[in-house]
Image 1 (cartoon, helix red, strand yellow):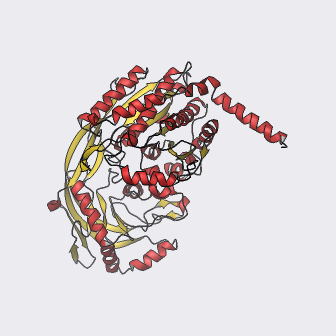
Image 2: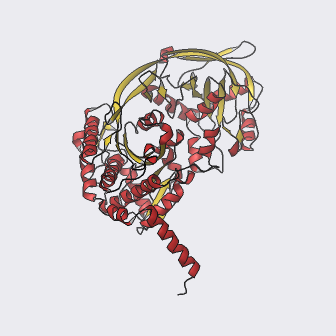
Image 3: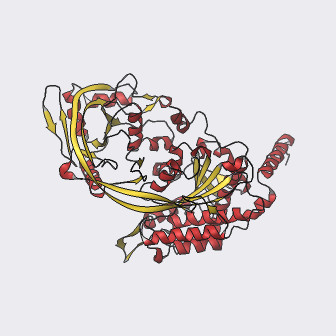
Length: 548
């Protein structure tokens, strides 16, 4: 076969550049990643003795103690609070007091209508203020998105200061799946409104029927909402609640919005058609909302666990590359086939185990990386990414010095690893680093094989992205010699995800765990060694949102 000399030369140059970024002794060390150690970590963390690692329960504390022991044995030094390995996170569940919750709409002619909680509207309980009374004008802000780069500028030429924004949810078409999923969270809309001085947001999902709204609203009222709280009582923003000056956060039914628009001489169907055409439809309303609500709280204490391996470069060691994984799971719950312990072997004892073995591998390096490696095991991921959000907003190291987060969550070691889907890498220069790491291991790269699952915004890397820190989460790809892998994974999830049967005996291919740990190690190693920090792509949505 004839070989193009230029192509061959470029190939040699690329291999040489990889070798400079990852020396042969480092590559050789990754071959010592021990699947038996990974298996032993999973065996303990997913054992019945830990009772599903639910935050605030003794089983979770056992997991914390285990991680600290492993940190110490591998030479990681404390990077938590007060010279220790932990960061305390107060987890607050907030519930509405139904009989002390009300909402009324009053029109310009003085007529008023009182709405019914759980049927017409839903409020999220306020985690900071036990009692809220409000009266404020309503303003319609179309789809409620302030992102001109996406073609949405719904706050243009309209004053929302001191008002409650009414939003007709319309996700932009033809945008990346990660962006679309980010735009679905209530806190995203609240963030836009808050920046323009609003005090509240009422969302309406045009595609949600009244019966489905009632079911979801009443489940939310019964279960309340979870958030992490600082020692001073201030909250860390969550998926549902931004806090700050947002006093009213909730949703209303389509029927309520139709009546509201009609009372203001508007037609909801025509407005929806306008939104679909990309028209600007924001406008003031002549309606005032008034009401009150009270919230009750229950708090528990939990912990993030943080250790570090200090870097060797005089300057760069003051910067941090993070390996994160969530330590918690669902605890003890409804029995299925006689078993009530939700062990969480795949979710996420396996991710923690991989991160611990990566930490051990780093500890064996004769020459440590230039930047400092931080290992963060997060609490309360299953409660809404609360532990990672708390750390990302209140880090134990200077936030400006955090370069990147490499997250490991539910790798799903069900087959040999032949392809990876690096969720989030495409938003930053992590994309190039990931390609190099994959090539060194003969792994192919694919885009998220299941973008509608929302995995990018459902795991801890999203907390870092929201905080302005580039991050990724390496998932198994579905390109595999097992042609039915995608279907096999789908069947496994349906049978075992968030169920007691997620146990160590169920489906592990341990040889895959080495390659998974290797690729994550190589990604973080190259990020730690490069003189240039990992950087957002300048035209990326998640970068541009930081600039506004």
